Image (cartoon, rainbow, N blue to C red; front, side, top):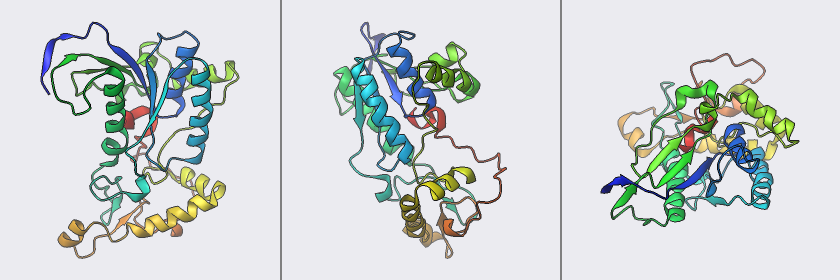
Length: 272
């Protein structure tokens, strides 16, 4: 897309909302006057978030709306549980390595960017000349996770990290909710995210048995991998569990001490 050399003199401001602790904190800070007003807070629904995440979305959609903050909930129109191998999560392959992560762009980044273009009055097709920095997007990354910051790869969007600028940590964010008698959001992530740790899988199994049954079926559905993988490797298999065994056979009684696998959906990473 061609850009003019000038910045937009009247940019719009948005919050990329994952319904987790930090991004929800940004919305609350706007309501409380701790951050400048924004033109909207945007949540991209992949169709199968954690049940608690949907409760958070329901509560804070009402809270934000009642306090004058526009909430825009968007999606690609299909659920991640009905994925195809072109937009799949990073399932673990037979070798133990994750396959290429393709879900983030399809279910999160693209819908949020399309919403920002719509709210900015820009063409949905990404054609035509666009002023630089037509949209500023607040990202929910806190000071203790500043290494996750990055610049936008689109000239019409500029990312800002208010929590990093203010040196707010996850602990500081939590205190804001407590001080204002508001429910504290949990870490948000898709139900089928392979980066769940044992305690997160165990929480789903013990608290949401119907969801767990669906996950077991989903895990079995991905076992044969994609046709392309099967064409290259005779014993190609995919798993939700990093140990490359069926999810139903995992022993969740042991503490997960694996520091190498990081849930990079947390703290807004998925929404950049």
